Length: 475
Image (cartoon, rainbow, N blue to C red):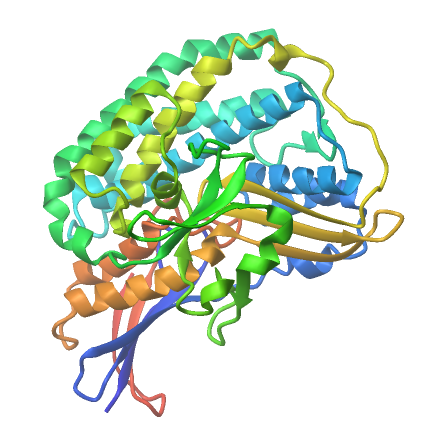
């Protein structure tokens, strides 16, 4: 008799979701599904609003990565105005996005996944959280907290607040970086760089303890997508879109965001509110692709900063030119943090950051606009259609987590088939590995977060007729 195991809720992710494991008649894992069980509705309730308001509204999609939506929305507004923003405004937007990547990646690595990596997948679940990490390794936890604080404070220095800063607008930004802010950033850069370099060393030292996880956490061929510079280097704000395959071959290059519907399709799953984008020329599910830090490292030729380039070469030498295992999203995040710190280091004394020429003035010149930027979790698209008065007629948001949806589902199946051998006695650590497989992608499902503490976990064995035959609870 076929059965189903349900993990509800998934813990230490940003939002609400559950995992369902489907068993065949022989009791073996046949499939696994990742379900997003909350509905947001931003695409619908933004209709009728002036496009000028969209950066402030869509930033509320998430309290962890509001800057990502702020910038993608502002770039969409730039397209509707048909303007090229002043160079100082672009540099300031880039600075805020670098800070956003730092703070979000630090949260993911130290707070959400650090307990698994440095305490162990099978560690006491009551202590396998940020508080347990603080107790076991207070120095590492403190440094991780301060690294995230660095990114948050840079955002606040630019936007006057850490969350939902009303700063980047269609046509540019509101304010430059103050002299005091520049001094604070410069003073904290050495500590931030030292922390991420230490974290890289600590992660490399424990990799051998996770051989099975490296082999089973989303280790399969797929496409990868993201932005690159005109030269093919790592990019986070502008550039052009590129797809590569699991062998490192370029599948499509120099793609423009305004044409996204020609290369990205969006499928809907009946058991999730999360859309499932795919590479349109291959269809779904063959067109499955991944975005985010691992994808960005796979598609680029170089990082563009000295120490991050060294780490990228070592990363590729340690594994392969194109790394397909999703467990290594953690490693890629640290390389990206290092790159962001180095890029801030190289630009902090640029006089353009203090310029007051920050806005391009215009009215509605296009009735449609598409903006793209790299959020910490991957490529983010905003697409608005407006009327002659600039009122929103329709909105389409393609979120990074959605673009990883097909890969996350396949990862759940791979992990379940690899680790679950006896469905009558599943150790808690195996259930945690299923959750950790999702945490590797760092999905951001809403503005709520489960970063602190331990949420309850429920695993049910359900027959085809819906009868619950057994249940395991974690309080």
